[in-house]
Image (tube, rainbow, N blue to C red):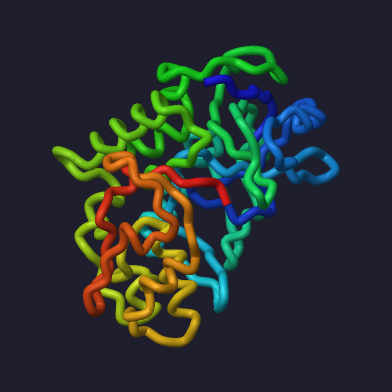
Length: 290
């Protein structure tokens, strides 16, 4: 799979970092203009931009849509955030009460990214690496499975700290490798969040606290969490209308095991009273970018 290589540095000062996003500044900021696809990468005057780490989704540390800011159980949300920054090379991080980074050691860390495009909200979709870059910055290089295994994306899935969440931009061989790594994190010993995951076994949802309580909130795929939060913010804990809500949200995706390409997560989400579950594991779905 050909992707653009950009060399630069990771920075976290002033941000509210989580387990699947981090800021990055290229050594040559104009290389952002080389990122393929219809969407430009949004960056500041120094070239600093936000990465969305490809193929992974960490539990939400701060999500807000249609209501007050909420988070998923912070034990795993913070574990993913801390492991991401440790892997990159930050040895000490200080945050204020709002979780904004006010000090970091070192202040920046050299690294490199591989990208094939940006999201509609102008974040760069990236595989992220450290150490010696695998090629010349500003050039397209072939990304194979051995190279994927050197990225933090692969590391986070193998550690069981994030969910695999695939989009169409990722080639099948890379997706298959990440699926294998995710399944290995689930058996024979459940690592990280998989020890408490109820995405496919079912979460009991009687209100927002069922999803957000620091200790007792349900550990579920963040995409499902976000849709549930949006629905509950409409004003009722009754889940009878949730399938229709999912149908109207019209997420586009493919089910790998069946070859179906439905519109709306209601096809893969089962609601039975207060119990909600997905009928396919996360790695069986490939989403269309919004």
